[in-house]
Image (cartoon, rainbow, N blue to C red; front, side, top):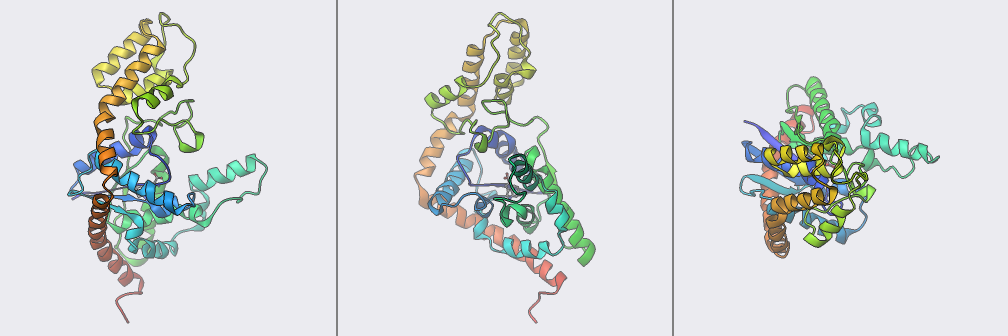
Length: 333
Ligand code: TRP
């Protein structure tokens, strides 16, 4: 039996990078796993988002988005991380077997330090402990529900490896208790480029929202950077940002046909962009309509999240009681 666990941070409007890098692979994996959990990691978002009303809004946005994209809440427990408090107890216990050096080496923390140093600031300026211990909390999310497969984008692989290391370290010290998970990376998804060619990311301001209306999507697609080759000049699809997004939404045959037209110099960037828009609309247009309907029904969203939290807590209590027994904080004295 395999258990898939996925998570998404409700820290902003979801964009195509989130969708292609982790949401779409996670939904596909959930559909073929025996058990699956999808959590909305609101305490991870708290490290950067200091606005209660927006945190709630983004949480409901994510819930409605996942349901609109086809998450079946009967099969996959969809819940808010903060509704499963066992997570935080497990994270505390895991901290006791986490080498501090492993946190020093975690990418998100290292990137923050590198950015500070490049700007001539103190290494840890603006770094909170939530960012520093982010991988421990994420390990809590995963290990709590006995996850063995974690579908993530490449940037999150290290976090899953840390979760695995912590499970191994715990098991070595206290006996076999936690199930070591593995990352499941879609080999087809490279880093999703944004409008300017850097990784698509909210912090770079280069995103295309998941459910943009066609007109604003058109304006954004128009901004995707290209070179100045004319339609009749041969082009290399492998280095074109428009093509690299298009290939994610196109069928194999469409991908090959457009690739050929690039190489032969019978397509211009304006036409390629129109094809990209059509391909996005085809995959996400209906989901966008469902999103707007679902988002308008907050009581339904709350009911789905409450039911998901109940089911996740069922699994969580069992794990936590094994863990407490193993370390000696349970059963009650
Ligand atoms: N760190 C993940 C991200 O930013 C989100 C996340 C939190 C997660 N907990 C998780 C992903 C557990 C998978 C499993 O994308």
